[in-house]
Image 1 (tube, rainbow, N blue to C red):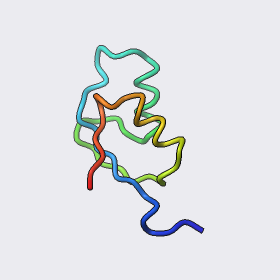
Image 2: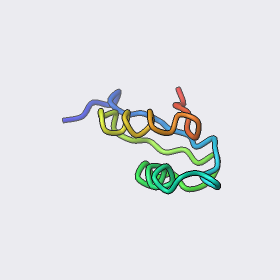
Image 3: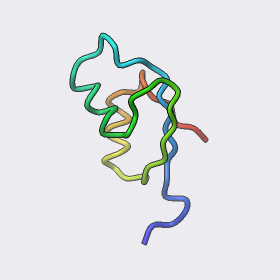
Image 4: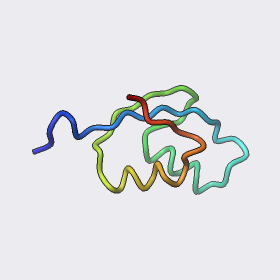
Length: 62
């Protein structure tokens, strides 16, 4: 069972325009598709890995 603290809030800060298709797909996989959109996801190694691949497009919100 996941605890409340096992979530991470991600905000899209960069545009996917003129980016490789793989980076666009990573944003879609995270649930992001528009600038300044904020989503909450489970804090798993998979999500952390996706964030690490596009650090210039997303920010972790406290």
